[in-house]
Amino acid sequence: MSRVLYVSQYFVSADQPGGVRHWQHTRALARAGHEVTVVSSYVQHKEREIPERYRGRKIVREREDGIDMVRTYATPDYGVDMRSRGLNYLTFAFWSMLAAARSSSPDVVVASSPTLPAAAAAAELARLRGARFILEVRDLWPESILAMNLDAPSWAISAAARMARHCYGRADRIIALTEGIRDGLLDAGVPAGRIHLITNGVDLDIASDPQPVQIAGDDFVAMYVGAHGTYNALHTVLGAAELLRDGPGVSFVLVGGGDQKDRLVEDAERRGLGNVQFIDAVPKREVPSWLARADACLLPYQDVPLFAGALPNKTFDYLGAGKPIVAAAPDGELTRLVREVDCGIAIAPEDPQAMADAVTRLAADPAQARAMGERGMRHAREHYDRAKLAQRFVAVVESVA
Image (cartoon, rainbow, N blue to C red):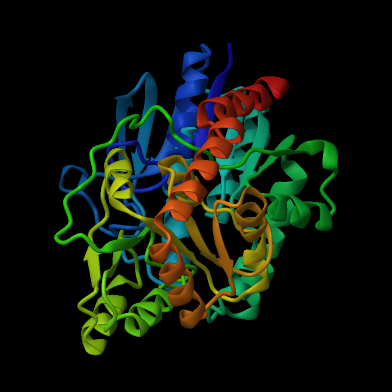
């Protein structure tokens, strides 16, 4: 069996907030008999702080779920500006590669973007160690910088483009999370035979029979669970809530954390939105219990063409919970899924009135809403079982080992 070094700045288990894709994939590698070492940061971008047990320590080695974990320092002041974000990425790249250099020589190095400096450093480490290199692309760079309208100097955009090309050129295999990312890789000149599409999926093993959380009242609950960040157009949700504020029976519940949360909370208070409730980020294991209380789930995105190729992890959480989805996104992968499976309502992005109308429609016809959710659940279980997707990931690793 092979020694696999897996580099991802953000790595969380089911007992922490966030997506558990890396956790599931590395556990699958370990179960298949491979020796797995994960290099990640103990500074998570949702919390943006150094946990007490890691303070004063730059590299910490632990053992979790049969996997050697190496957690490193990265600057905790991660924000929406390019300076703090870039410093966060670069410090992780430095400490992660120092930690990796002290680890056993790997047969395969796997690196996951969007932290591109660390992926580029991992590609170079693989070259120096004579290891095969697999790149997982979760965001396209520099396209994501441009789409987010970040105040990035031209040299930073050029540097991101060069790092991306370097990683693409070094990779023996590239894993794309969505069809849109795969198309972007093809446009960048990556041969189709080196690209493998492995989407996010439904975590059937985390909670099979969740008990709904208690929310006061018996309102129809439109819920969002996920990051409160730059990508997520949660101002659309607040706009819809304002339109429905004086109507009966609809509450909006937003669960999660992120760099935009404080601003959103202040905005909701300023508007006097008593029908909006903010909940702090919860561990992945608790997400099914929150979704069990939802009557519909919200997926708002910015009106940016790049997001037509997005299919975020929360989509699969919603599908697995059997809830209808209100997808407010540019026409593309997400809206196509919702329409083809008939598991919700696809609307234009950043349109509060359209979101309010969609939520009202679902609240007025609970039977239709339940039927949509059930169709989504059946489709997800058939096509997006995370355990099966993890086995596909293992097969990609073993194809180069």
